[in-house]
Amino acid sequence: MSLQVDRRIVAMRELPRLPKQFIAERTSGAMMGSAVPAIVINPRFAWSFATAVSALLLLWFGVMAFLPFSARELSRLASLTPDAARVGAPALGVLQIALGIGLLPFWSRRVRGVAAWVAAVVWWTGLTLLAFPIAYVQDAPYSGFPYIGGGQSVLKHLELGALALALWAYWSGRATALRAACWGLWAGQLLVLVWIGLTKFTHYEALGVERLMRSSPLFSWLYHLFDVRSASSLIGVIELLTAALVALWPWRPRWGALGLAMAVVTYTLTVTFLFTTPGWEAGYGAPVVGSIGQFLLKDLGLMAGALLLLARPAIALAKRNKGTP
Image (cartoon, rainbow, N blue to C red; front, side, top):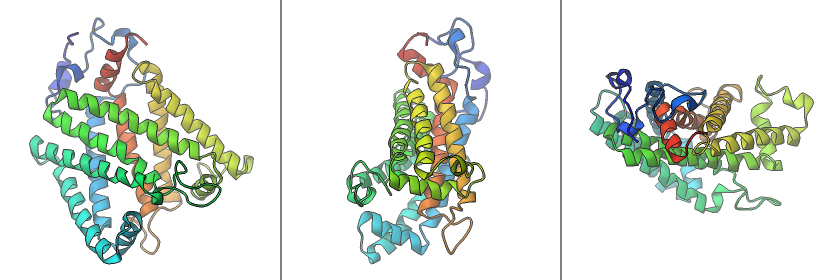
């Protein structure tokens, strides 16, 4: 089915050429018609935010890689010797900084696209850590898969990689790759919300959540009403409800949009823990972030992915999968 192109969107200089099937139409007889979801994000904002977040995370984490705690963390996660980690961490930092610079707007689309493609590979390579015991809790009664512990941060790499792939496809005008990236963004949302949401019903996760929420003025009141396990379980229920709505996105975009909006609120609240916990690396202070701070900041990438799925082009893709919601 052909789409009528919104010329006002195409005219924006900031937007590169997009495949026609990903450009929003606004006529009543077009594909979305009166069934456009009530929650829709402007594509220009969604792509700009995705670019800014992707560059920010790469640059920020890249600089952190030159600090001693990053080598120790790499040694722990990748089972490297201390000497190897002291070489590997800065090398990874150089790569991240180069990719972050490559995403900045003063380069050509081709250069930015290459940087985004390599960034996707880097993020997805991190997912391999999920194959090792270090990613999971090893204390009874929770031992190994699926009781994820330190690997929670790595779970977010599926979304971050899909976000980078979307940017590459966007700047390259590749419809098939952009389609695949949208599905990757959708899957990345579900992976995080479902898996981490289920862990909220465990004792170890309830203690971890308490550490974040008790110091937050937005969440501390929960512990006046509930005990530690109940407060964590409540958060888990909300995350699983959000995931259930997000799961409907390919077939029921209106409900999926509601779930994605709830996810955006969730990620926004999570990022506030960076300031209330605080999430800065001990002994350094702001803006130095270690494993906890980086875990929290990665939610900006999840937020960017959710906003992209709320943008009209992605909704058009979902609408093509099924008729009127």
